[in-house]
Length: 333
Ligand code: AHM
Ligand code: MG
Image 1 (cartoon, protein in one colour):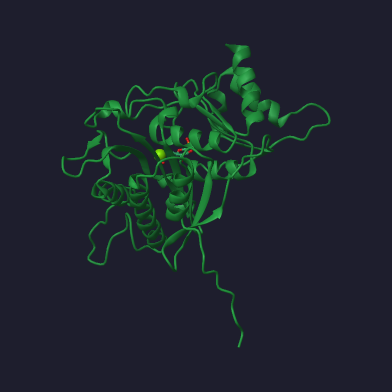
Image 2 (cartoon, protein in one colour; image 1 turned 90 degrees about the vertical axis):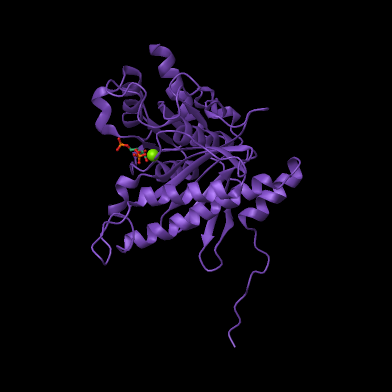
């Protein structure tokens, strides 16, 4: 008989987070329970993204000819329900909801979760990777959970991550102690540790930006990207890669190095991406992987969001590449 080797001791995301918490700080188990709710949301969305790709969910008409809810609306409801019922959340901020959601007494916990339930959803019909981005704060000491608990600089976030829905579902997570990647094993319904300790190379060879906006960029920004395409004699130009789906573009940047940017420009003074649930989590992950994230002159994690849907410019990726951007922004400031 052909005997297949079976691994009987797998490291799931939950096991890994509990192990790490035990090593580094007091583990109350609350954060693990909250992360279980996040995982449930991601698994559920992954299933719906798969179904949508074969025309069974999101936007299309169902068999009775009724319009179905859009996939981003479904994903938002999935996350709100999973997070609220965990009993660990006080405040939720979603890209899909204008106002923050304050969890009712009885179910209220001590964490705030900010999230974009389905980022890049405009790409979904083309089969391009999309993802959920999330960040977690602890409510301020003595607070009952208000909007003030999330209008805080990103350096106060305690957890950040994203789940990319592609050929598989990939979760990339930091609890402030490095970055790890997990892949969903559909057979057992668990995220398995597949990419331990992700470190971004100190310099990359790829740039990722919507170059269609170049006409509106500042001088510093134009000079920077020009320098990548027309390097001094003896150096190779960078390759361009832009999917237009932040999770996918950042995922590649974390693994291969280089730079991802959504700069400010003359049309969009603060760029396009949202501070709380797009820029902060990705900046936190990048720093934890050994990279850097700046707005031009400032560290992204030092930004204080004015409102829950504020935007900020962002350059993130390999340390040396981001430092080149910073030098040029200083030169023109
Ligand atoms: P969304 O939140 O409406 O999906 O927009 C965010 C997306 C990001 O995933 C991506 O980085 C960016 O928009 C791309 O924008 P553009 O098409 O202007 O290049
Ligand atoms: Mg988004």
